Length: 598
Image 1 (cartoon, rainbow, N blue to C red):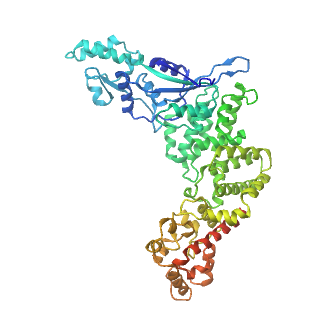
Image 2 (cartoon, rainbow, N blue to C red; image 1 turned 120 degrees about the horizontal axis):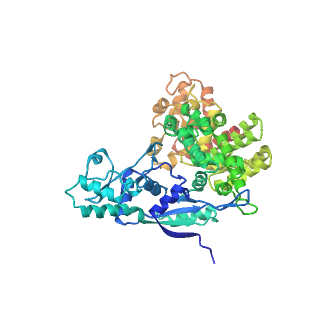
Image 3 (cartoon, rainbow, N blue to C red; image 1 turned 60 degrees about the vertical axis):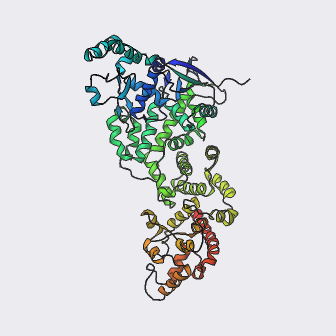
């Protein structure tokens, strides 16, 4: 017989709020900050007043933890669904502050019109209108008695029937006596089962990732500074995207600004680099994996709970040690020197622009490799080489595109147990064989997806080689990428479209080059056989038409660096597919040479 995975009970609103205040229910702020509009808080109060259901809360009880002295600490309930509703209740009923989307503390006050029995968000007009109770919180949290509230209202509004006011205000005061369902998930469930139960219960189809559960586990632990650690992750990710957010933290969170975390991330206030803007899942992964030599968030959740994988018990010492290691990992990941040197390495491989980064997981693991090798004391010049190669290899092979956690878990265990050079060599032997370069990669370049990871590696190879743009004498691909230059077609798009070619053919990645717009305009929709004949004449002294190349040797050199076969000189529609075949092979060869030069 299968055991019950959860229990369902109805509780009074006031009981739920008392548990939140006492810490019996921990709100981990998975969706932090409070994202509801104030009108949704108003509507929630109206639903409770009218007796309508407001859905279930879902909590996952932390396991009981064995303390050092042999006693047991009972686990709290961690709210994993219903944070917004509970936060709305604490704001409207208890009068507590919320943190809004600008991370500012403010109050949401809800007003009630006893005669019309309707709710509104309090505003200056309502505050001046004696027919409204401008803030329901004092009545609901017993700061003001029901008797005093009714008497005061009736004195201000003698024309309204006292009995009616007594009835409606009494009904209002009973909101906290209304019930809400609490689904409590068993403490011994693994994270995969919790995720599955959550999805099945949640009718809105909301899916919480395992990183969300890890963040809830972090935020709900007060003993080892979990809420501050959670803030550090949130704030770093927010600052990385919006440096202008820095003064807001200083203004609204004085406690946090006195922490080491804030000092370590303050460099972001002047940082506008957008090559790597990690979100909380990325940052948590980069901090966790190299410290614990594990790649799965489910393991992190277990370790932060104090799980002993051998005895299957939960021990406070393991939780304490795990929080200390995660804190060290966060400090490593947000360190200015580490972060900037890692980005310098990625840039040195030719990846200059965030648009060239198509696999965040590959970038995350490249940073993990950097941090791990640095902690192992590997010489800096070797770290640079290994990180470049690992990142490019990961992109070319799609190493983290499916089952990324399992792949990361395998990789970090290998890196921790053997020399990186040996492990990298074994991966290259398996994944980057001659068959890959000569056939697999060539086939992968048969694509019309402009964001193709293979095309981005090709651009990186050109940048690393300091190649010139197509038909450019002095302007490099680096220049064109850095200044948001345009990608154009060698066989012009309009030319191919007019001759019946479909999108999937004229937008082949092997038909793309970085080209100056003014040169592309001159080319227009001419067939290659036409404009290359004119280029030939240009190189024979007949005047400049396309760029500034005026010598045949220079033109051939430009074609070679852009992987364009010299047979292009005589090509027309009939040779388009042959052109693509030849260029794919040349592009793959260039990427191979590039990879082994890293």
